[in-house]
Length: 76
Image (cartoon, rainbow, N blue to C red; front, side, top):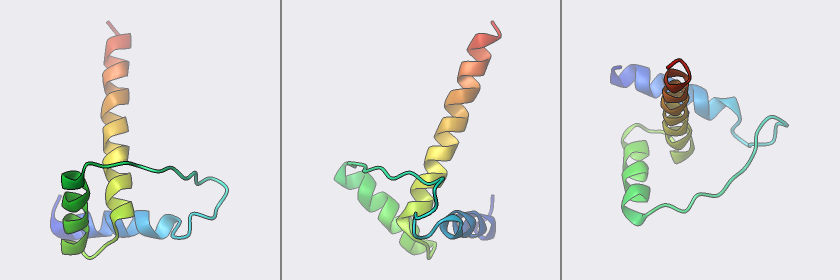
């Protein structure tokens, strides 16, 4: 994935629900270690986006990976 694709993906996530006001959106709080917080903040700044879409994209990727691992265990 190149930088343009990355920015486009982040923009789509950011535009999906900027206010978080729709019924399908749930809120949660995260407590992050300071180093991780600043890594996310710096990344978002470099890619001219907000931290929210960076975190959402990372969580989506993590869940895809975890669920794929679960499926592979179920087929054994």
